[in-house]
Image (tube, rainbow, N blue to C red; front, side, top):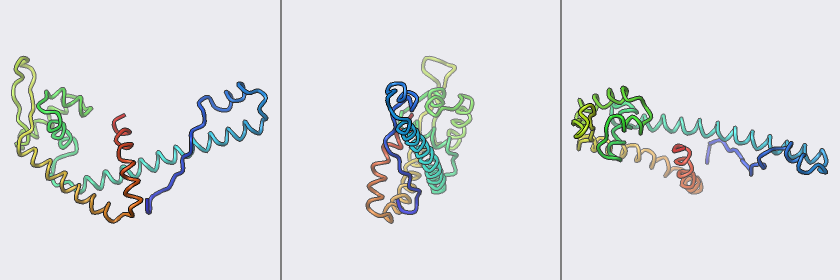
Length: 182
């Protein structure tokens, strides 16, 4: 990728390290074990450098994408709204679990979204202590506009990249998604 850090990461050495290698093959010369240790150290350093470079790049891109948002909602409010759009009506506890926040925090988030007309709150049909939140058409429209604006910004940036960088990003996207989901 043009202008970005380049970190070469080769195959990982086998688990167990040089001590296991030495014990399994006591006839190996010390030079071979030393070389193996250097390979392991180099691989670990390369992975650490890659982790640092990815963290920084993802954080910068995330910050830049947030700047392109069209709404005045917080990231937590947008995430809760998107969860309701994706999964349908849910209790506040279910939304909190999806977003990995505490239920009292989600209560405040949903209250704000309801006051803004972006979600509706209804009583749970079988448990009077719970509330079910559902996204409104206004909420769906806000998310669509927000996504459109950020997609347009990113598409403009992608169009300015060399083709090989776009291919690399296309290959990296599912990997980054798996990292984010783990």
